[in-house]
Length: 113
Image (spheres, rainbow, N blue to C red):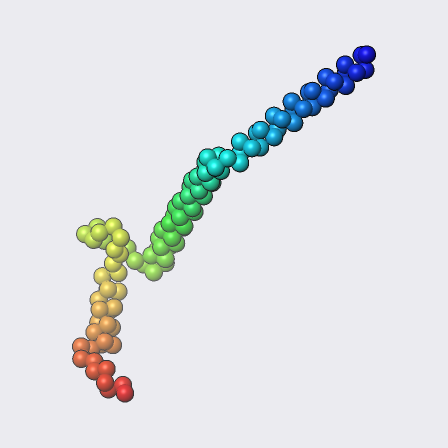
């Protein structure tokens, strides 16, 4: 008699446990739950993409500063923040070089044919 009661109770407990597990899985597969999971994943991916973009931007800024230091480009206080200028003598040589290598002339595209 005790053996039958034990197995009856064990079977009932196993049935309750299995039913609970199945119901939890079914709730995870409802359209609302799937939509919420997808939205959470999209938000998480957006945050990771934003962090990546900020890292790239910081790296670009650092590398630009390194290149400006290496080339001797200095920030001119009279210019906007994102514009750099060559130092005085180098700037004048660059302007003179540009004038000698790129004279003003009209370009006729038909001459090439």
